[in-house]
Length: 342
Image (cartoon, rainbow, N blue to C red; front, side, top):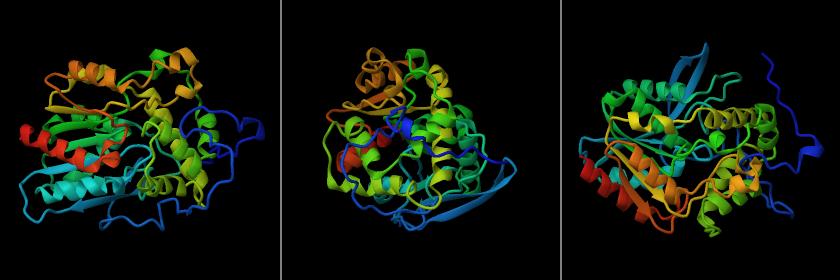
């Protein structure tokens, strides 16, 4: 099967359809290029592999499995966002492990160090199924399932599919707290999304994150995670990486989970950075629509009211990635929440 990998026409270079945003004018700095499976980027812990067959093809799921020195008998599964990887949880993994938790952090199929299949039907159900199969292989019967950003949508789907395996659901600034289509964001075909993905650079990723994630405040330590994400778009596998990025962006748009929040039957914690304004596709919406999107301070309250018994942890002054922006503060808040949910 030949996939329609296309380079963007010059006339399309000014389009801003979705993340990442167009870069600011000026020469780009030199940044590393990585392989399609993040070859060349080192993770802070040993990377293990889960091999399996999915949709008729051999897959390799990369994952971290970090054992604590003094186990407390509990396991936390960390599910990354679209622009993140298992490695981005480095500080949180160390904190959880130090508190006695076993920590498992997979890279989902299509992302980071895991397989980039030439053809794959991406759905949150499929990714949840893959994650469940990994946990079965590792002998994990029940776990705290924490998802950040896109991983929050995946974590919610996992809890809906496997409530008996979910000790507590934790969603950290998850995508999907609103239905962008219903609010007026127009659909973008995968080919058009692919054109935008192909324009990804360090500068475009940083510009997007600076505006939406960190409320205009940048710290040098964020650069490593931008290079991690953008580096795959600069290497030999960039067209495959971009195509999968387009497919997963469409997955996020077309598979809302917000309508099923009342059906979640497990203890749930929402951790919401209050300055977050993330709204995939807002740049292709009308200005009057875009300005109403991504209001996480309000969306967190609405979601907490919709999920039976949910607890809302508001993080003032924090954006889309509070575990990156303020790791000590975030880790302490999470450990406190997990102690209550025990």
